[in-house]
Length: 238
Image (cartoon, rainbow, N blue to C red):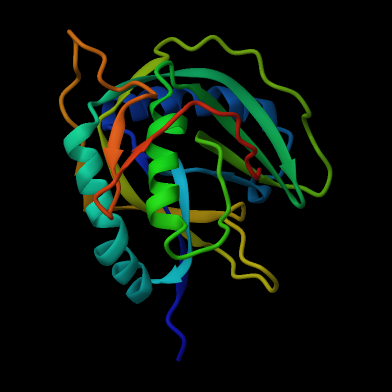
């Protein structure tokens, strides 16, 4: 019997205080979909901010992947990178196939995610196993609506009451599809989301006097050499 597979990502899971803020936002956005049949609207029960996609794997293989490849890399980041601020930016609607997704886009003022964490993990962790791998855009999923035609096609105007939050650790995120479909697996399907806390890597305390989390920061890779990450534009799969 084949062991069940799930999507796995490295990212951040929000603390309870900020989750209340996200639930409030979701409640407001839900009103815009009040005319849609309730069975077609899936409310995301667990808010995450994924940074990098690891693959569609069974638990045995993700354990091997983490223990042999990603745990040493994340341990290294946890010793080098301080907790850093991000800001809720805007609410965007994305229609992909038979789903309409509502996301909160974020801003990372110091470019820690796209210029340090993601390139480092991609170069030393992803490319060590895959020639190519799916890139994901770091953003918070609020709602997933099953629909063949777009309901809304633009960003929602929304003023965030508490836009700032701190990314204080990196963790392994498991995304389990609610309905297994034929064809290629997609993490865009309705899914249950779990934070696998046994693979959690706390970052250093916030640095107030010196900004060490710069795009020019050097982090040693798993071969002992140094890589320097520079800010660059990237294309993400929606």
